[in-house]
Length: 176
Ligand code: NI
Image (cartoon, rainbow, N blue to C red):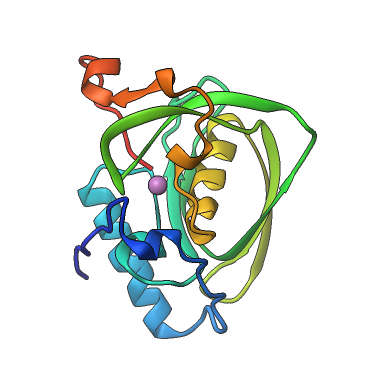
């Protein structure tokens, strides 16, 4: 186990499209996932994608705290290889996001309200889930990292972008 160095906005790895994982059961992938979990927990994040730790593979770890949003029951810690997202409906909602690769800042980002997503676990088993609200937002944010997209690139209203400590004084916000 190791805490990995997090790439910050401006590093080219964050703008590259990550490669599919040919064999999710490879022990090297399990080791990377464990290191990513440790890194995410050390940074008080709610999700982390492999490009954020300088690895160009389609691997994401995330969880959602129960009670984090009114429409979320919480999601246990999940490791996703090769995730894919399908929007369910056209409804878009705005919500605040932060990112471990964009430290100290937060912005209001449009995301699909409801999605279906599919991924492989590290036994190679395929999973499918439906997500709404903050859960759907976290999955969209993390999967964007696999396509070289950072949340500021999706902000429409830059008056809704700033320093977390100024926007939300007293709030200890988690980062994606
Ligand atoms: Ni992020």
